[in-house]
Structure formats: C-alpha cells, structure tokens
Length: 249
Length: 106
Image: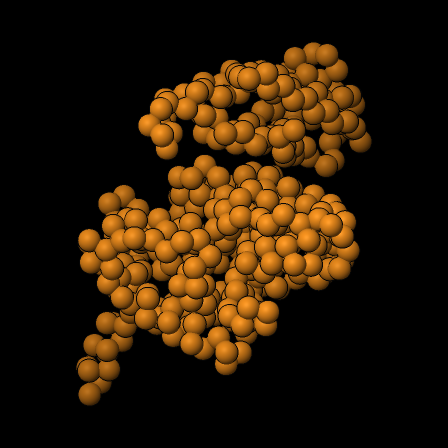
C-alpha cells in the first residue's frame, strides 16, 4: 500500500508538483536582464504605456487616468485577477481585451488592435502594477465553463505532430526539448519581452507559437479559445507571483 | 522619438568610477531578412553611439547588423567633478537622437 502511494507520487504530472516559473530555468544572463528594470528591455514598452495612461484620447478627450487615477494604486493586483467576466459581452475577457474595450467604448478612441504596440504598452504598464502579487483568479462561477474548456483544449492533441500542451508542459516539464528546458507553462509574466521575438508579445502570441510549432492551425487573436486557455493556465498558476514584464529566451 | 532607458548611479563621490547603462528602442533591422512578401527588408540599424561628458568623448561604439534589437550598452567613466552627460545615437534613415543628463557629485 505504502509502495503504491509512493509510485503514485512520482508519477504525478508537473502541475501537481511544485510550481516553477520559467524564470528559474533561464540562463543567468537572461535572469539578470529581467531582475533589474534598468536592463529589462520590456521597460521601454512600460514607459510608453505610462505615457499613454495619462494622455487623453478619443472623442471625449479622456485618458485612462481621468477615471482610474494613478495606476500604481488603482491597478495594483488587477492583472493577477484576469481573465474576468465581462458583463457587456457576457463572456470572459483578458486584460488586453478589457483595455481595448475601455479604449473604444468609454474613451471613444480608435480601437487598439491585438499585438499593436499601444495595446502591448498599456497591458505591460497595467501588468507591472501587479508585479509580486500572487495570481488569484476570481471565484466567479460564470468563468467555470471557460476554465473547463481551457483544460480540455490544454489536454487535446492537435496539429500534424499530434501533441497536446499537457504532453510537454505537464508530462515532460523540466526535461529538454533540443537545447531548451521545457517550462511548466505558467503565464506569470505576460506581456513579456522574448529574445526570440526581439520585442514584447502577449500570451496569445506565445500560444500561437506553440500551436504552429506542433503544426496546428492557430486561433485568431482574441479568440474565445485563447481566453479559455488563459483562464485555465491562470487557475493552474494560482498563488504564483506575477513577474510582468518578464524576459524569456 | 525612440524610448530610452538611462541608468546613472544616484550618489556619486568625486573621483569615483561609475557605470552608465543605456537601452534604446530600435528595430536593428539587419538588411538580410526576407519580409512577409519574400523581399529583403532594407537595412535599418544604429550606426554609432557617442557619450560625451562636457564635450569630452568618454565612450563611443560602432554598431553592426548582427546586434540585437533594442541595444543595451554599458560603459564606465571616472567622474572628478559634476557635468553634463550627452548621449547620442545615430543610425540609418537619418536616425539621430540625443539625450542629456546632469551628473552631480557629492
């Protein structure tokens, strides 16, 4: 009986093991880039976001700050609680979606496209205010269907390589895929500066990269499937500290 | 104007050697990559960086196409007395940006 329990313990998927941020597996030089704001290239986007936060836009000449005031206080911990339920569209939305919605509907400004520099900059600036805050998805029962859809998508084999997210990031996390260590895939630092991209990108861009990697057809940006996967991943990473804006290889 | 991060130590004693760290937003397009349409994207890189402390060049660097986007540069200088640090980045397509920072010694 005891032996059986031991066997069960060593076969647990990574998600049930200790939560480990991708930060831990990076080269020391890349860690140093992230650790200090003076060297973190993502801070260039944060600077841009800070400027956008207080610059009036749209028909009403309102800025984010006109309603929300100082982001340091009003946006503290906000990014750690997304995706959240959006009353207007009666669907879950991610932080970037919320910012884009605020932009068009409340400010009356031209829409910010997904992955556009402006939206990434604002998401990074808002995300920064939650740095160090523990990820705590809202206990909203309306999000439950999205979370279970995300869990199903995460476990579903896809693409010509016929691989699911779980096969790498749960079953083989910590082992190597060619030269790199397979991380547990926790969305702690998005939007983040990826050295491969030489720029800032969102979680959806990262998911897209994995999907084309297994030769599956990626979803369009902003698709409910991505939001569902994000909701599942955030639930899986509950309690981990936010790192936004992170640096990854 | 490209976004720039410049890090200068807060408290400097006279005669101290300090490290200046700079980061500038720039695509550093190498001129060798094909774009989405298959044609080579024209080169667009920074060519030269010059740091002057009160008109004296304290550090200069030349950039080449192999340098990554948003280049980070760090250099050290000896500060005897306070002055003005002028940092200038020059590049292709007429890119020219100058930032100045006041350096005071305690």
